[in-house]
Amino acid sequence: MCGIVGYIGTRAAADILMEGLRKLEYRGYDSAGIATVLEGEILCIRAKGKLQNLQDKLDGVDNPARLGIGHTRWATHGKPEEYNAHPHLDNHGRVAVVQNGIIENYRDLRETLKQQGHRFISDTDTEVVPHLIASYLHQLEQTGATPSGRSVLLEAVRLASQDLQGAFALAVISADFADELVVVRQQAPLVIGFGQGEFFCASDTPAIVPYTRAVLPLENGELASLTPLGVEIYSFSGDRLRKHPLTLNWNPIMVEKQGFRHFMLKEIYEQPGVVRTALETYIDSNWSPNHNNASPIHLNLPTPLLEDLEQVQIVACGTSWHAGLVGKYLIEQLAGLPTLVQYASEFRYSPTPLTRHTLTIGVTQSGETADTLAALEMEQNRRRDRQDAAFAPRLLGITNRPESSLARLVPAIIDTHAGLEIGVAATKTFTAQVMAFYFLALDLAYRRQTLSPQALETMLMGLHQLPAQIEQILESQERYIEELAHDFSDTQDFIYLGRGINFPIALEGALKLKEISYIHAEGYPAGEMKHGPIALLDARVPVVAVAMPGGVYDKVLSNAQEAKARDALLIGVVSAEDREAPEVFDQVLPVPPVDELLSPIVAVIPLQLLAYHIAARRGLDVDQPRNLAKSVTVE
Ligand code: AGP
Image (tube, rainbow, N blue to C red; front, side, top):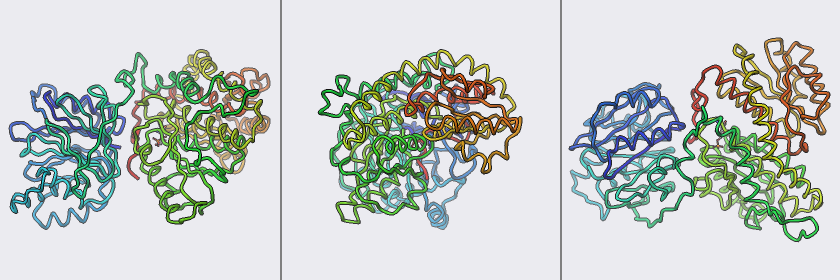
């Protein structure tokens, strides 16, 4: 949700800021802007809409400034118009600020500032920040109070930050401090990059990795002053903090499309590799059921986290929540542990009663989703307050970003190693999250002895077949699905059905379609259809059913027949060996035959392709669908 960048160094800041914003455009694309400091003045240029509009305005402007900040916006307060675009300035144009997050008390601050003579020109919450900072700068100048060791600009930003309530990351420059960039983090991500004589800041690392892999994520309640001489970090209370950067292990090439038309398609095609990496990372290839004195799964989690568990609860949003639903099925079926799956945004305000010996898993590919982080924090606090060992917090994260806020909040994570995902619609990170749940469920099953060594070996063999099976689907199905997508140029509604472990796949198929094609799509448990949604069906509403072999296969087929009787066009994701299903469905999307427990991974691939091709066929912006952002860092 909104991307911010900043640069101070020896190169032309505007180019670096624009390059950084390009890498962060997935976080929002309602408007964009940059501000630079040159010869004692701030030059601020902003444009409504996509980044290209800003680039068009910048073309031909000679700007050698070496200090600047930039922003790409996902509108929260105020319409996506240029006057609401960041950076925002104080009335004298001496302070410029970009922000990610929400300032909750901005109305009160605005009123107070107005009474002091400040004038506001935007509808945003952010605009109070440069005014506040300017006001503190003025006070510091008047009183001559020079804070011990801290720069005047940092001090003004620190005092302003103490007045702000909500979640915010800020980057601040001033025309009066030509050699300083100040950044702040409070409940919204902010990373500092350390180059040679140059420093960067950004909401996310892709904006920084082209220049350096040495990064330092700020923690909540911290701010930093970046000057050509180095970086100084302070707490909001003014204490100097000593910190060391960490080194990222991924490279800039991951942020390119590599010949694919869209990032989403590239990421769909990366899934065999993602699954292979997960298997290589977490499964001991030498394990055998005959010499089974250790678990074949190596998650490297602290032992007390998983000991004597009585319950598991999963909190997540969106696609990660769907992965959690598959996880519930796996943990319950394989390890026999009751498992609840909660929307993080619901759980944080209506938590379930505390249960004993409970593992709480936060699933978030970005590791920055505000609701998921807040739900985990709330769970941690209420369990600590209980002061009873049986209720002590046991938190685990499943994330694709080991450097994220989630990874720093919880004591242990499973890193999904999917590589950076740029497309707003999650594809490979979903598959990777489901893989993490296979490993966790099998590890728990091993520890709790709920699965025989032979059954465990069979599951492992099945998991190892998945990369080749996904490749086979991509090779054999993509053309066909691309053709099929032509049939839905005017379709306005879709229904997706699934049962058991494939009910979440129906939800995921529907979510993929609606978020990138803007077609209304509902995922439903197939057996529930007759309790309401069946009323929607007629010849204009296609029904996609996941009908993989297993305990509910016949039931799903019957539910599909019920839809067919209402004239719906039926599309089935079925096993390639199924001879019965093609009789029932109008179109089949065959996938290799797999064990029912493994079927979500193969079933989701044709649904991702279907959503992709329907949206691409409509000429839509698949990677940056309207109103969405990749990383949802506000409530
Ligand atoms: C997925 O296609 C969506 N864009 C969205 O639902 C996403 O999964 C959700 O916002 C959660 O994100 P997270 O995994 O980074 O927490």
